[in-house]
Image (cartoon, rainbow, N blue to C red; front, top):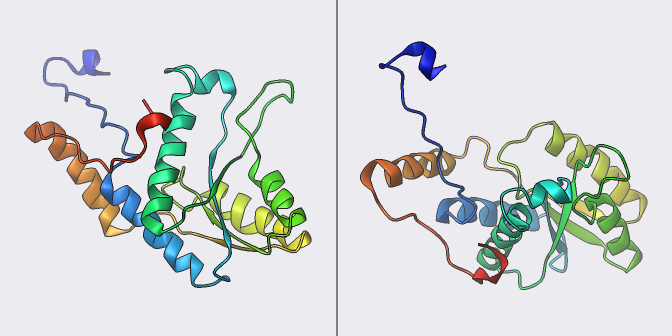
Length: 193
């Protein structure tokens, strides 16, 4: 498209991944706190993100996607005051013989219920908006599955139209435009490149 537009075509620049940006961490930590107000204090925190085939997770580097999700979960959990939490995956599709990231969030919540957990806060760390894979998969299907095994489930919100998410995007642009060092929350770097 740029070639077809000629010399006046706009330059396309991809923004960096922002899983460790302070505003990303803050938004999700606040959404966990809001969700926690609706469940007992001993609720288990479970992060979820879209599962992908294991081979896709390795495509850009060894387990890059899952390590970045794991790192973001660790940063957000720490900011929200949780020393313990779990990471599960959702929205698996495709042939069953192709290995995908696991555990599946529904299987994980069921296992928590069987182990005696009575309430869960699910934080969709891998999603920035309430679209079908959040509203249907988590708010409807997962909630029904959790209730069937005696687990009360609340979901932490996604950024959606939070003004801080717009500020995050503007900050990423300014990092490039002004040559500023990236704003990052630093945690245990063993889990990410």
